[in-house]
Image 1 (spheres, one colour):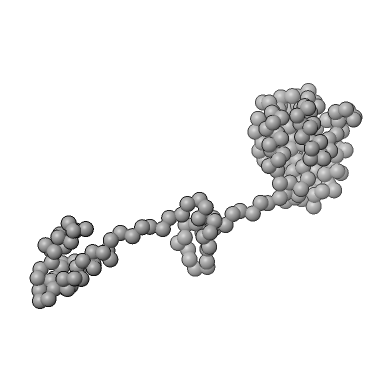
Image 2 (cartoon, helix red, strand yellow):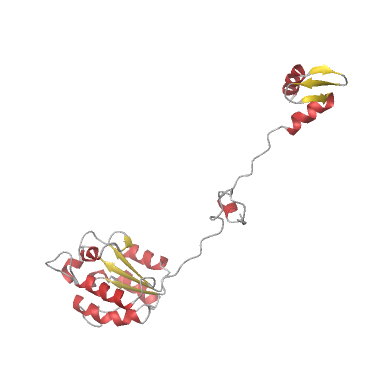
Length: 211
């Protein structure tokens, strides 16, 4: 600070009880030091990840880059989610000579006729899960799936009603134990044998839960 003051003093031309500075104009001698202190850089206000949630966006204040992101997003729950297994193992259960047509697709098409688009979400999964693109994609039989990953997806789902279409080979002890722990209902397995042709019978079950 002493060095900075000396530089200011050199630039300040003596005049009366003070001096004339080319940038500050006329200042009293004690005002030079005061001006230096006032012009000292002040720490900038920054936000860390936890602070962002505290930022409020008020009408008319449009320069807040956090506006619209300040509050945590509300979790949106879908009325119905239908997950269709499209892994390679489904080739045995739902084989079709037409790669664009299969019973899984027919099942989803009938659900879409019974439920409004806003109340049902169709997902397809194998090694990853994603929102259905084209209806033809429901008939794919590629990749593999992992029971542990499937359980994580189920836990993360916020759907009010979730139905998963997969084959019997996926009903491992791990998956069965988890489904039992959440009081889920599964069709097939030890109770009764189902084929892809039986999917149509579950359209009315889904309809009860969608709008």
